[in-house]
Amino acid sequence: MRTPVRLAAFALGLVAVFGVAAGAGRLIGPDVPPEPEPAHGEAHTSGAPRIPGGLQIAQGGYRLSPATTRLTVGEPGPFAFQVLGPDGKPVTSYTRNHDKDLHLIVVRRDLSGYQHLHPVLGADGTWSVPIGVDTPGQYRVLADFQPAAEPEALTLGVDVPAAGDYQPVPLPPAARTAEVDGYTVTLDGDLAAGASSALDFTVSRDGQPVTGLEPYLGALGHLVVLREGDLAYLHVHPASETALSFQAEVPSPGVYRLYLDFQHGGKVRTAEFTATTTGVTQPPAPSEAADPGPSADGHGADSHTHD
Image (cartoon, one colour):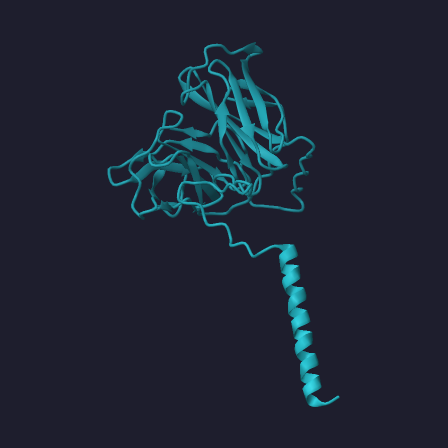
């Protein structure tokens, strides 16, 4: 074949190739530009799962900025932090939720040593509160708050260490009852992943129902739910003004730790429960022989701190 003929055939081949590609493009559809990031304060509407609270140190333009870098074992020591806004300045105006502008949760990474605190806000936007922990280890500090400029609350989290030897404690097995300071608290209800679950609690003492529970944080009780492993923080809402009833929605199957704060006789107490979602079996705790340690602290509720 002579050269001009070969060149013509080659050109016709290119035309055919590009024609097929163009046709495929029409069948598949045109390129769609990526969805723009939502403006500050807006949520994605594409159906993507919502990230649980407490897993991030920054979200929606807000950042948790601790000024204290470690916790004190034993006697409480000062702990200070700021919430920085989208402009990089400390936030000084908040919307009150559950009778407080900000709730601070402190818990060790193995879900022991739980504390629910309410820091004091300074004029410069610095929050401060004394914190003391019973045992060394890595602690998760969770700030639950709603800036006045935002329609919804945020929960930001940061790890803060308490120096010393640390040996994790196995999570107690799932149970329907918990004992704290002579009170027996019973849980009725089960967690279901991705659905709202009714959780009802009753309190008794010496075999008799306890009456006269006192309001605490705008309700008869306050419930915090944390997911084992990453310590995702779940917002739980009271379902009744006259009973310890709550609606909780957990995002995934798994094991969770429930912390119920209730007040009686002028004192706040915390009952702790391990709960699993429907269809999930809690894995057995590691044996001591397989994982020896110099010490281990318990999950006793008597040492819990409230403010």
